[in-house]
Image (cartoon, rainbow, N blue to C red; front, side, top):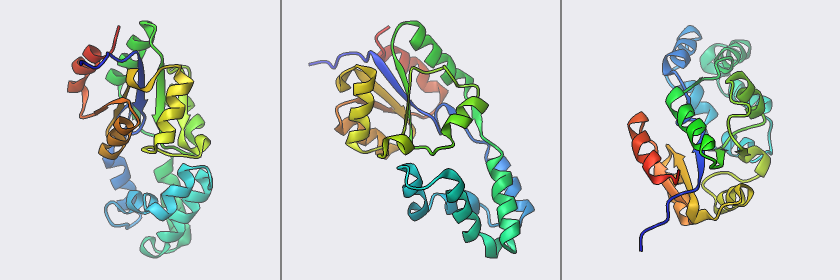
Length: 206
């Protein structure tokens, strides 16, 4: 039996709707004598990352931990704090083609939710990026207390959208998240870039 076309969209923020210029991060690392990739790798260490994703730690405290971990390679805690602050001042860029899809889907009357593993800095980021009001719902793991790819995360998102899981399409760039969404009953597509947009338009019911 053919699967029904989706009548609601969940779109990931980082890696789909928001892009990061790796050259910006590399420039900060170079100026402070940090190894290539050190900022992101240190921040994404699971022991530091997991608590902030579920609201146990603030974004600011998370960055304090990152700076402390980088104090030695940066040549001191003050330099590490400066490096982290400069890195964090860059908040990425919106992919205009993905935003156009979001607007198109909403204009057709289908609900769109932002599904992101984020922190308490998300609201400020949405303002900075000009995304306020661009989606119907925001599902922030920091507020929900559970992160993708947990089944509960997707269940709560679908409930809030008022759409059964089998009629919700998730677009994400993380294979684990895509698999988790499918296990929760959603349609899910791994984002590879703007070449995917025609396919996504075809599988949405509008």
